[in-house]
Structures are given as C-alpha cells and as structure tokens.
Length: 451
Image 1 (cartoon, one colour):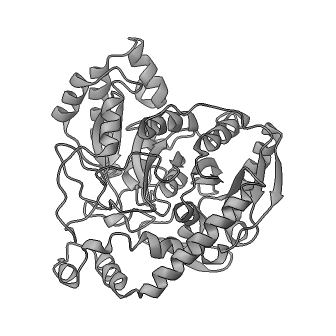
Image 2 (spheres, one colour; image 1 turned 60 degrees about the horizontal axis):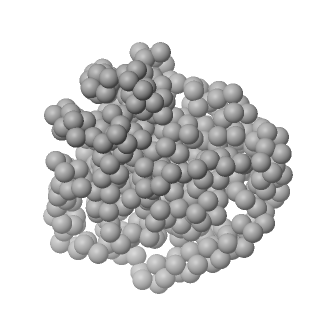
C-alpha cells in the first residue's frame, strides 16, 4: 500500500520516524492530484513552489510534512479565497494568514492545494461552482456534497488524507456522508476561524474531513489548538428522535443507520431511548434563515445588480431573495434558536448523544440534485438542512460517520450530535463504531481511489 493510501496519522508517523521522506510524499501527492483530479475537479489550484516553501520552513509538529487540502473559503498568504464564485458581492477578498492556515503551518502540515466548493457556500451538493462542479469519486455523475465539495472528493479519492472544510448549515457533514468519510462539525467557537469572510458569523466553523475518527481527532486538534484526548464511550445514553428525521429517509439509509446504531449500542453497552426537543418542526427554516443571512452586511442592491452572468442565476436569485426577507422572519428564527438551545440543554442532561441519518438519501445526480423520499421528491438542498441544520443553529458539535452502502453502491452515513463542548465524546463514539464494524466502512474506497 502506498503511503498516500494510508491514514493521516500513518503518514505523519512514517515521516516522523524517518520511514518516508516528506519531500517525496509531497511530490507524490502533487502527482496523484495531477492523475486523478481531472475526473473529479476536487482541487482547483496547486502551487508546488509555495507548498515546498511550507515544507522547508515547517516545524516538527504533529502533522510535519503531511499534505493536506484546504477549502476555497480560507485565504492563504499567496492566494485570496474565491468562495467558488466568479465575483464577490462585498469587498474583494485578499490573501492572508487565515486561522486554519496558521494552525496547519504551525503543526508542520503542507497545504498542497485549494479545494473546490459550492458557489458562495450556498448549497449542499457542490454541483455549482465558478470552477465547475466537483464530482463524487464513488460515481462521477453524482454530487460530492457541499459546500465543502472539493475537500470531500479529494479525501475520498485518496489525493490527500485530510482536508479542512467549513460547516455553516451542514457543509462538512454533507460531503462526508456523500463521499463515505468522517466529518466533524466542531462546537461553535472552538476551531480556528480568523480571516473568514463572515467575521460576525454565529453558525460557521472550520473542521476536518478525513477517512476516520482518529484522523479527525488529529486534524481537529490542530484546528482547535489543543490535543483532543480519547476517552471511553461505554454506557452512553443515546437519544433517537421520532418522526421525519428517521422515517422520511430512503429505506436503505434508514436500515443501514439502524444497524449501525444497534451495533454501537451493543459494542458500548449503551442504551437507546426515544426523545424529542422543542422547536424541532422549525429547525429547517430557522437554520437556513440565520445561516443564509449572516453575510448581508456588505450586500446592497447595487452590488447584486453588478453581478454578471458568470455568477449562476441561482446565486443571483438567492441574493435578491435574501434582500427581501423581512426582519420579523429573522427575529422569529432567533426565537427558535433560543428555544432549541434551551430544549437541547435540558435534553442532554438525559442523554449523551442524539442519532439520526446525516442525509435522507445518498448522493443525487449532478444533473438533477433532487432526491426521492417516502413523502415526496425534494431538492436535496431542502431536505439536507432538516437533518443537519440543528447543530449550527444550536452551536453544538456533530459528526457524520460512514455506516454502509446503498443498493447503488453509494455511501450512507449516521450522524451523532452531542452537547456543547463534547466534541471528544463524538470522536470516542465514532471510534467505538469503527472498531465494532472492523473498520468496514471507513476503509471502504471507491474504485477511482485504486486507479
């Protein structure tokens, strides 16, 4: 097995032990991106000289010499973020040392490329970008998930073992689910965010997309600026919320997630009980309203009108729609947020984690991003926030873990959510599930990754 096919921590350990040369690993990663990226459009830019300069100056940190990718949402000293967009509504982005970049640099990692993303971060599929759609390595005619589409596709294709994404309304967990990865949405405020284009955000967090939970623990710790110590996930109290979060999902998704939950329960000696929380019926609209209006401070009608046709018609229409949202709607969304936060706070005194499918259906086609559910056919962008938006609305941590494949051979994922600050518990639970399933799903790879 080539080193690039091994986990993030294996690569770091091999380089630290002198069993692999960091310069050769970087060259191999650049070569692999060149070979595989044409089919996926996951990486939108590489910069070999800057990457080699990072390596030459890298400290002997926990990720010394390990190539990683970073979402096009974060500025680098030599490149401004583009947000997957041809034009920007607010001030023009500038190159700079974003928090995630500094965290990677100080850990000794090497940024090997910038990864694609859904235009402006305003979608859960990744099928719209100024750079062209990113593609899912499991089926290149399908969406890799958004908005961190490129990071997800790049890790799943084994171009890199880890990537930094951003999650505002599920944008790390959707590509993790669609691409068969583990993706951690940290507790709000815990991971590095300096330099983000929405400095006043109350929902967006940086976070890791990796093969498995131990790699997310390593990369997440780098982004947190602390070691995420492993613990014991035994005897957990797992809450299952009845209703559409489970019932209105494709049968293959529901069955795989139920099996995984039963496996986790048995492996950890945990108990599962049915629970609920106040405001659940309003989470979808509240999370979208808040998440999609936080960047309005720099938006004006004149700036929207100045956008050309190289910005998608969907993005231009969405920007116009945002300007028409009445203040009372945002106020009501904030009321829902307060209600949900208080209700979850009470609920997490009774249970340790909540569990339901990360997404209601596997990755949709790029040419038609709708999904068929028991209740109806919906755009993926409608049903995905129903499953994932609550973590951003409440600020609590969540993790998506792969738990199976659909009849079409597409990844299926289970989501676990914990109380504020209990990111480590989610990683512990995910690792327990990996052990109980003998790593069947975290080690599964698309055919393209073996090319």
